[in-house]
Length: 121
Image 1 (cartoon, rainbow, N blue to C red):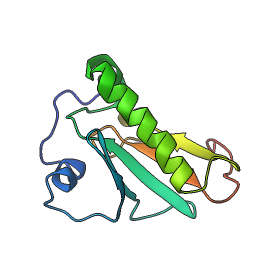
Image 2: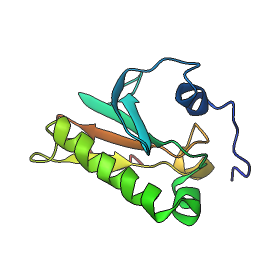
Image 3: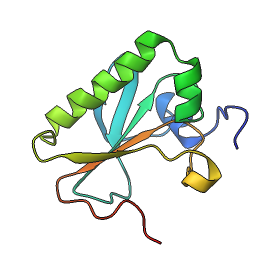
Image 4: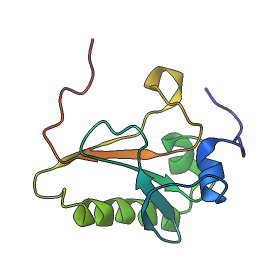
């Protein structure tokens, strides 16, 4: 499990403006941008602006306002991307066994087509 927040992770650098992104949404709580290796016609990453390693870190340590703001942003993005009627998948990989590659909490929004099985064996 990742223990300390890494200020040099790629999402921290994107938040600092050191690395560009294809931004689709931003407010005081989140930055959302297109994934550079999309797995669906719509593949957006939503990241909180605070220093949270994982969804469990975010849930345990973010303020109620930041948590509410994060999920309101997910709803707004899903609406703006026309995903709400047909549906979409949201994924937050957590830790080594969960396949988390960047140690900054992020939620994947995937949609625009029927998404396959949850996991392969």
